[in-house]
Amino acid sequence: MWTSVTPVAISRGFKIPRFHPDGRPMSSNEHYQRKLYEWSMLLRGSLKHVGIPDEIIVACSIELTNTPLVPRSQRAERYRAPGEAAVLSHVRIEFPTQMRGPLIIGDRRYKGFGLCVPEG
Image (tube, rainbow, N blue to C red):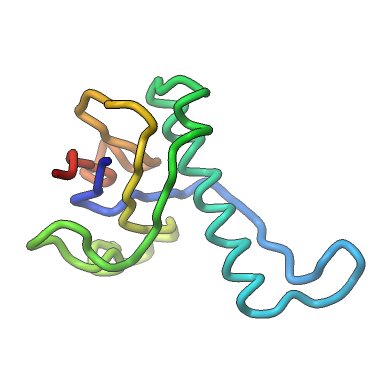
């Protein structure tokens, strides 16, 4: 299990529909669940980009939260620079197999975001 020390930044575009395919409006909970799904899919893309094999990416579980998961880190929004438009979220990723580090993911990984440490 790996946990972010600094939030993961996702700056790639995504669109969350407000309506079901049959035209019914989504509830706020359905919209929120869809947003989490879209974010987790973009995060899986980041895992692929750093070289993690597809079969491991598909089998991992991802938890997204604004709340810090590591002592002495801050809420995700506290890391936002003025004018920053990227999604910032702390993550906990459980892989089906032991992973070696370091694990640095996301679209701002070269700017200090997305640093993850093993839990435990």
